[in-house]
Length: 435
Length: 162
Image (cartoon, rainbow over all chains, first blue to last red; front, top):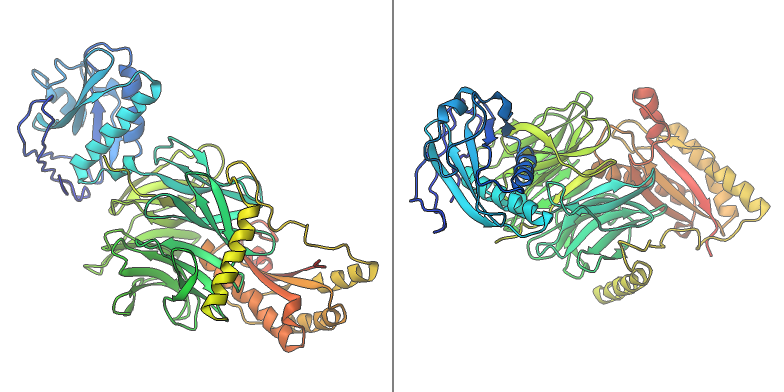
């Protein structure tokens, strides 16, 4: 399944799907169109579950909680459906879709329970009543098993709708404060599950980055007199702190082969250096007489976006690591920083200083066009592309303290990610878990 | 430094930090504490206060030293040379407007500017360290140019190493 709803910004977004169902849910491959979604928004509703399991409400809530994190989805209140959200059959037979269409529902999800250990979840296009996709899920006995099914279904849903399901299969690292001069690295799934403290160190941790195999998180660590490169083994939860001559370590970024690009000082200016897999310094990745920091490398390992002040003010540049060619990416504004290149190498997101804060922009490397994808208020910084090259996490002060939000490459209503009490900053996506 | 020597140094650093930093979820890393500092005598304390006194300030997104900053640094140099047993950490700071990583680089340049000026005044490199905190540690909380101007700065912290 691939690229079905690539752009929801239009007034009549097209959703064409080819869906293969497991044998348990009998359906032939279908081509489905959904029309009528509002700009940037798909209105989604879960019908009342059928089958009468006592666990249905918990699954319904978990799916709604997950879906409410997706920037282009709006959860419709069932109370607004004429005659209620009940349906004749979870399989779709005899369902009066017009009732849902009247309430502006675009996608309807049904849940058909068979006992308490199996549920069939289906998605229908309300406009024409057509079945889009569905799966049968085994539900284990624990409460956690309900959440696992919700995550799996929502990943399947995104896979069907936008061709990318990694959002609910990913893990994120980020920074949380533990006081005025103490920041540590935490991890969680983007929906807040599995919130885990990875480090507990004196000083301040910033700028985490995941190794391609997900086994290590590197980060900048600053204590009262020095910078270090923090290396956290996510399995054993042990940390090393590596110092480098020059006492500066800024914004490490893993490369696909396990080497690391990082801002170090060797002489007068912080520059981007390449470290080997054992973190030994190999070479400078670009030569300039200005500040060069914040590398971000695509999964091919051939394109590196970075911030440089070589033209006076900080701007975003792109280096082709094969040819050595460097070109400027950000064209507008006098302060563009925090680049994140999409894993597929097609886009670069960055933060532009505007008025009282920063806003996130996305530059299309194919068309050379730029699009604003965050709109404040407050300051939006440190965008980070998800492994699917579609979702973008960033940190924002729009709610007062810094929190993590997610939007998409097309913009849309940014949703706050649940990171627990306190502030949260520096989102970094880890590799997605494939089924 | 040749590559082999660099590799040995890296291995040594890794070994040292590994010993300090086991158990990131449960155990604090002990680096950067006060264990590596000696108590100062009264005259050293007065010298340290003299060196620490006098923050220097910078323009927005700049790291060049103003004339007043050079005068301030020129007053610190003789004391530092008179007390070679003391070491100064030059901290570079930024205001809140930029982003974290670029500000860490800018703060490094600000600290480095003072370091090089003091070096030219004859202060030994072995007596100086630089560190950037970017916008992590503002001197004054709030917004507006009056506040920002006080946060774009170099501070000087003195200690007596073991």
